[in-house]
View 1 (tube, rainbow, N blue to C red):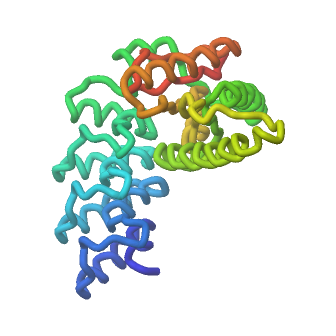
View 2 (cartoon, helix red, strand yellow):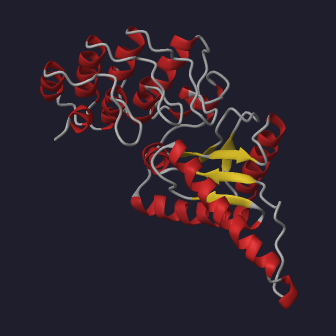
Length: 287
């Protein structure tokens, strides 16, 4: 096991041994992740062991604010992957900025895995809010309830039908798109690129009577990740991610959000959303 794998698996002894032998604590792996990033991702398996490794790396001089290729810091990843606050608390105590966004503009509180971590980050950042919801309002009217397998399968089928409708209306709409928000955005971008290639082929075939497709027909993205699905099974609430074409500006985001939320509400879902592009709609699956 190399040092990056050791950091990811919370093996503090192996990490300290490699650093003691002269390994560069600022090195990055082939994907551009630092040791601190990999340790933060390991919080998904064991937040306490991850916090121990993070502390050892910071003691050795690891830069706490080093961004990954998509702009996520170690704190961002710890919040996104951890089901308890230990790793996040340690990073904040060691100087990590809690008021950060990734390369796509998603705030760390939006992508925090559990409400306890999101609330901790919101308090540290001085926002008093998380996931774009009005303080205390969404939680009060959206009680959590674990879904059975049968309930999730039924909900998944209904959600899939809404996504199919959005896809037909000009969105790239994906279910279980990767593990993180960045994964989902990348998957949508790839699908949009493939669709653009198909449109080019359609335009080339117009002379032979084939269907022409508007090359500028992309409305935006809508997706949820595997991590979001896990959260939905545990709480009965599915967070959605969306983006508005062509450039994600404020009005484009609001329009895309309105269409996404409208589609789910038309399908009979209760959806909690504050109407801004910075917040994620939450689909209530408990009804």
